[in-house]
Length: 338
Ligand code: ADP
Ligand code: MG
Image (tube, rainbow, N blue to C red; front, side):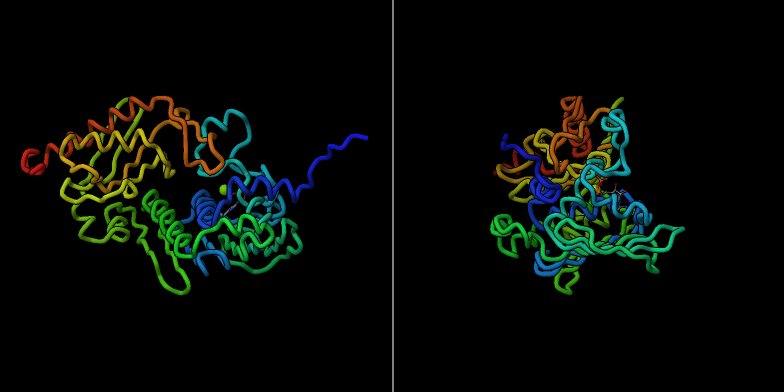
């Protein structure tokens, strides 16, 4: 008798969840990205105890049809891609079909959803098992409530840091999502307190003001540039408004916040010697490009991507920032270095 057996769906989903759902902020990111993919113009996020007790995301997007509800929680179940070709031409934030299955494997989930035409559906999934779904009158959109995250994976729960740290991570990711989507009105509440509210009018500088404060937003200038493959635009701070870390730099590719050190370096290079050592600008860079030039399927959380023409994009960014700053009457380099 052999000793190899295939793991149960519940167990394999729990294992997979480890890659996508590291901490409360991962749940928030995945749920908000789903709301954005569903075309929501309003997304309201509420977290209790830094998301460990409860995370709720309400959107006014397309909703999920009743017959799709049980499928949505299966692993590798997605409405966003169908063929290998689609995989290299991703126009949505999600496409792996892993988030809902992963979240449901490590938390207690209640879903309320309705499409434009259908009556709504309410569903409850605990420990990865769908144990209730029924029709109900629900307004169009989706409301997902995730309770007791990691209740059945104690090792993961132990790995979670203090509530203060976890909340900071949630705020950070929501800030970036808001900056990537100034056209969507977002709110974030923690234990009844309003932490963030964006207008959703599509004005990036206004969104920046909501996040970093009005005076910081005013110290930033708009830039834009393009070549044959890329369009870059955004806001960046003048050299006298800086921070001691690179955390205030956000790079968005086709509406997705990504981590890319080369592009961060390229933006900083645009300042030449205008920045003091150890100081970094505050900036949001929105890159639009043909999705064929970016491979998003590199990492489960999709925050790292592979760009086919990265050096070209980096050069465009550096040049765009350099040209933009050259238009400002900045204090000569020699004086800032005194
Ligand atoms: P993915 O986003 O990679 O497709 P998910 O597990 O996050 O996978 O979601 C599975 C499917 O459930 C999505 O493809 C989508 O069809 C549906 N879905 C999830 N969240 C929402 C939402 N907020 N609004 C509408 N549909 C949703
Ligand atoms: Mg998703």
